[in-house]
Image (cartoon, rainbow, N blue to C red; front, side, top):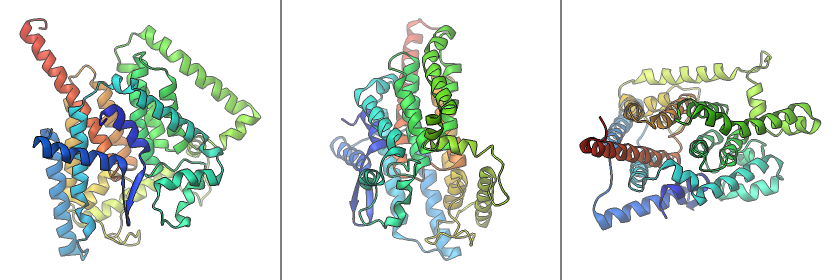
Length: 417
């Protein structure tokens, strides 16, 4: 049951369990419970040096930042700081199941549960802008605490899909992983193009400009570097290109298409980048740069040790500032140089490991996309994203180890030179 072909799609749609004020996803609870049972029964689990290095750097970076915050900045340590243990447990358990139950990407993309989840989620998200407020609330209530104030549910009533239990941008990036797997499988003619197209629809309705651009770039990555012949690439792309072309003609040349545009959030958000703004409207990129500058100012207070997050979130105080919309700056702020180094070692190390692998272009593309997402928004700060990403990393490292083992065996047998 706990195979990547089930876990990856389930991570997108998993409901929540609430115990008092605390909420965890069924995905997290299932993963950790199974992981603990495996340790109790077998007394061991799978881990790799790059994961150990990451965990040690992040743990000590976080711990030092908590001590520094209380000692020098009057920010008291709090019970929530223990979340680092839960966070690392999710990372290690996700990696374990990805590595030990390693699947080929094509096997995941071809699995029935993966395809059914993409279809069901795609149809729901595509219809979301046209649903009544009552129906939206009925479904989305399963992803919010039962006692949440009604004024905090405002995004549920927007045409922009708000994500299932995480914010829209993070949910879009989680969907990007499934889309990328479906796209690679479709390029190898193992599933229909309808599945990556549905993934792209989900990303479009969430309205994340960054992730939508990444979806296009990742498609270009596969197109350029996959070992499919040029003739096959042209044939493979002809049908989806034709479908997209027909849709765009309909969208921009018919009255009903013009009305439909109002409900496709990504079109409005992309066009907003090119429109002239009044003096009262902020440029999205300049707004991001301003947030980054504020984050760097907080980093300057303690660039080595870092300062743990303040319980009071405020843009009026540098110490209380919390949201730079750049995850590298955020981890530098809250976990110091060691925390920042943890992510640099993890992502940089994974990119280097895949450089000499014939299928490495797929994984390198994904890790560069992750860097891009972290640079302009956030990913790992959503707890639910952690086990999903480390599960995918586990798949990658298992694939690399399998390739090296087979290559070594062939070399020893004299088949390769």
